[in-house]
Amino acid sequence: MTTPASNTPSAIIADAYFDAGLTQLGETPNSEMLVVGMRKLMDVINLEQTQGLKLWLNVDTEVTLVEGQGTYTLSPTGDVVMTKPLRVLEAYYKDANGSRRPLNPLSWNDWVRLSQVTQTGQVNSYFVDKQQTVLSVFFWIIPDAVCATGTAHLLLQTQVTNFTNLTEEMNFPLEWRMFLRWALADELATGQPQAIMDRCQQRAATYREALEGWDVEDASTRFAPDTQSQYSSFR
Image (cartoon, rainbow, N blue to C red):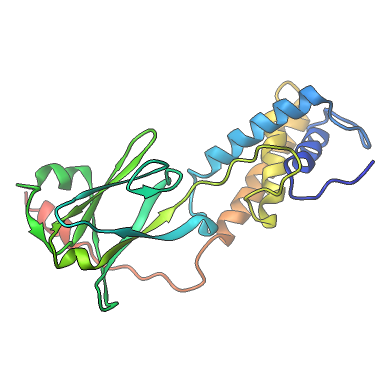
């Protein structure tokens, strides 16, 4: 039997079935097992994207500003054509000369407290509206003619590309393979002897903890006081 590439769905699924005690050494999962394994592996991957930082998914995305337009949608048919990203981590504005300045994030509470949302001028803030199929970003103040000569930039956490066949390379780096393998084994081990279920659960947790400690930026992180909280404390 040809040995499958290590970072493919088929390889991870085969190892997970063995780890869960559902196949023996040298035994290949049948077609039904592969279908179930592929579905459950995708569930693990999609859930994992919501947990913590995934540095390789961060993308600096440019948004072309239009005079008088405040809201921009990010979707396959939106103002920025792309798969709907998971969230906006940070944002900045770059003027026509290339100078950059950060933009302040607005919460729903900040958004509803704005006295009016039609004023035009220089963008200084952004509000993110997460919906099921589209992510919308509202820039405030709405860009005027001068502001529209520059661009807004969003640091997005994008989605992992879902695999469509068992032999393609996955969108997770190789160092994530051990976690995905044991996380899938943990899902597949339901109904197995308690010792096997405990082993799969413990190893999945151990490998995930190690990866979360690894998946950080190399540069030091600096924190600054949030000036907006100073106003809220005196309401």
